[in-house]
Length: 248
Ligand SMILES: [Zn+2]
Picture 1 (cartoon, rainbow, N blue to C red):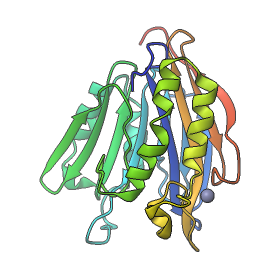
Picture 2: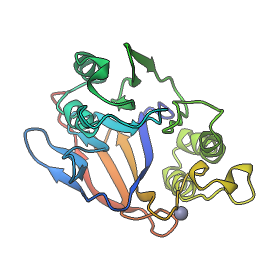
Picture 3: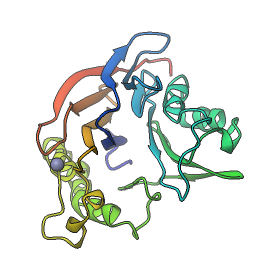
């Protein structure tokens, strides 16, 4: 967040999912709001997207002690709901209008050019936190906890990106982000557990795609770079940018 005034938000994400779960996209939708989003064909929701007002949203299913309750509303619908909003504040108010128990445990990132918030549901309340300037890493174990080896590894790999963004060296920043997303923790303490490194490979579950969204203030667009596979196997490709509305 906020590393350079021209690039107020950069979001980089690996999507980890069961290989059997059907997926489409990301696709560019034109109405009722122009937006980019991937589509989960089982529940109809999405895990990451951006809209024409410069709002970016992503959801992580948080790990919990008990298995998810299938009767609750799909967490993928959260991002679709948020992408109908114009600002982070509007999006947070919209989600907090639901009872926290409507969904299984999740962490939701909502960011616009002025503000970014992590919103999470607990059994009896909402927990939200504004993200200040700098690097923030969130995993499915817990938001911004250094006790998670995957979090620790990712912070280590992405920290050099911040000075590159500050210095407007965006191409090198994207290269470093892509390398971090495709990292397997070689030589690190985390490398022994396939779930503790950024790029996950197991028999039936793993990193299925990678995305990098870059909000450019003067160009009034969100660049969308995407690899429709594990990022260690495929480079990021630039998709057509999402052009932002002037009447935000
Ligand atoms: Zn990999």
